[in-house]
Image 1 (cartoon, helix red, strand yellow):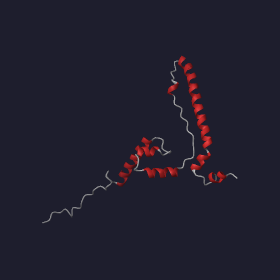
Image 2: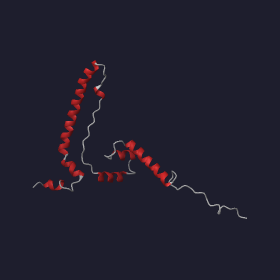
Image 3: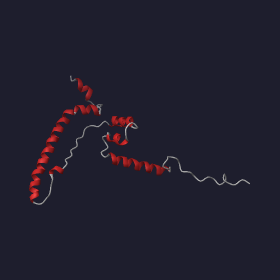
Image 4: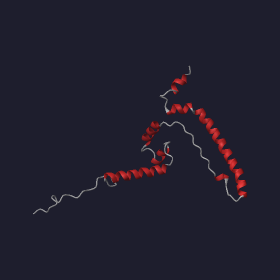
Amino acid sequence: MDVHADTFTGSGASGEARKWLLLALENKGSTKERKFKSATFQMFKVLSTAWNKKNIKLTPQKIDVKLDRNLPVELLSESQIQMNLKGMISDRTRLGLLSVIADVDAEIQRMQEEQEERIDLIGMDNEGAPPLEPEDNKNNEPKE
């Protein structure tokens, strides 16, 4: 009987447990990724010599190959980390730690837009106080 099989498998396995199970596969994937990038660079280097003869300018060094692999993400633990770090580090740094956010600047911009929409919907000014309504004329009548 395998001791870690009960701990790491089954329907209740967390994202962290699945990451450890997939670690060997992830390491192989990293090696394959490096080899693929190297081969891709060599391919474009060869192609650039042929294309340069046809006046098609290509600089292989400027080509950036991006590969993404999907690993299980434990969003609950990430959200708890976000809540614990709020106020301790900058929002930009904190949001950069979240795996579901690709562009932190765009996310901050969307958050600001949503906040402005909420302010417009509930009719509050920028300080968070409701707008002042005109006072009743009854209270402001001059006393005789």
